[in-house]
Amino acid sequence: MKLVSFRHGGREGFGVLKGERVIDLTAAFFFETRYANLREVLAAGAVDELRSAAEGSEPDLGLSDIDLLLPIPSPGKIILVGQNYYADAEAKAAGARPDHPNIFGRNVDSFVPDGAALIKPKLSDQFDYEGELGVVIGRRGRHIAEADALDYVAGYTCINDGSVRDWQAMGSQNYPGKNFHHSGAIGPALVTADEIPDPAALEITTRVNGEVRQQGGTDLLVFPIPFLIAYVSQFAQLEPGDIISTGSPKLTAADMDPPAWLKPGDRLQVEISGIGTLRNPVEAE
Image (cartoon, rainbow, N blue to C red; front, side, top):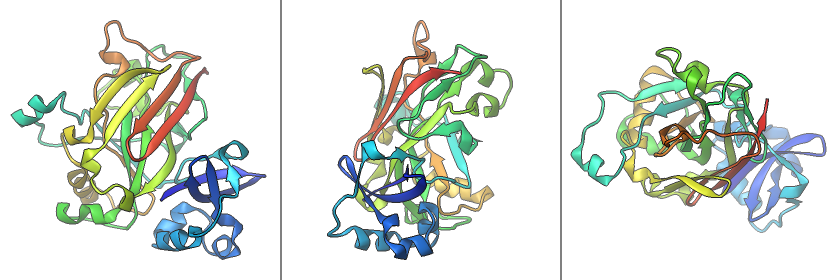
């Protein structure tokens, strides 16, 4: 099931994406009175209620009739993992990896939804892309065992962890270069975990103006998803709607010779098999 959040007719809603149309579940008074958004649905453990409500229903709205929002409109935490892909299967087989993952956070207002413009900062010409698999948490958890970690996943989404490289390089921390206003994107949908039986068998493809820039499988993750959930839960209490973004395969714009930085007028796509395609134009600040 593909769940989306959207704005239509001056109100915010949520529903199930079917092709190019949406079953509007906020139109049913039952959900209007109980759950204001998908984050509340996850917190209540009510995804199966949405599934039941959508069964036998016909879509009400076309994608052209609505403005998509972030799949979880107000996630409490957005946690990202840097440098988390082996270059290839040979590098993975060699088994070398750091002792700990590179973890950092992003503000929710540094992201835009599917279809909205990414903003190239006026302070930098080193605007980069990073196509990533996002893991959306469905249950509260702390000190989660790796063996149980996938039981805490509500679903998955596409993420562009847009980066401003010169600002990222100004010190030892990622925060400034990763938090420029509207520099990243999440969406278009939250695909429920039951539709992704093996998140380690997905293919990520990032395109700029139709040209493939990144392509890699989640089987090449240095720190796999269960490890990351368990690791993050050691220092943070994970809550429904929190998002862990798992890193980006090669090549980013910074890896190319010369670097192929994003510029106004570019069109970025992050496609993940089984999940969908996140599409965003680039505009100048």
